[in-house]
Image (spheres, rainbow, N blue to C red):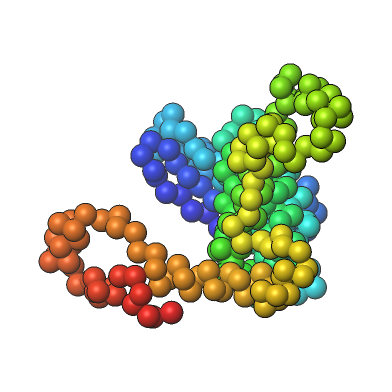
Length: 271
């Protein structure tokens, strides 16, 4: 698959041969072919507009060789994606890779681990742009609203991993450790702990960190059930006004827009 879209003065391509189907089953061979095809896109773009920068979208995909079907959540997909980022970085290209795909049909444990391994691997390998497909399920054939909410937590954690550990004289905490050892004996009330609560640590919006007892008292809801409730609330109440009312009226006067303004108000009850 080759898709080229000019975006200002930058070209974007997505080249996605499928190992074992439209590319060699050997992962090294699939990478060779995909790299060559993406280089060909770079040549075509510069024949049309010399000097145009390109988002080097090398996206090798994987087949399940038992069936020939696409497998976006496999360990092999995570591996070739990481190799892609490292290969393109070696040659100085701006990298774009696909990740966060899953072969699961709903947002279950399979979806969680497949999305986590592909997104985290792509990010840690140094890709410039990670297309994380939040909420996608069923090998790219379906979209889950609940999955979008769940993946928001996942992607936030990956971004926190990428931020890394800040090492300074202050963060090494020698004085804080000394004061605590000879003082109250724990760090919970330390001024440093309070100062770093919202800068050093990321708190998930959805994932449950309550005790088992508290979780039981609150109805034993699974992550998916909590996401489903969050989606319902967002669809009922979240109607940001991105379009100026005058501009909205002009658009409605010119085009047959079927979504009426009264349907875009909090509490419309459609969920």
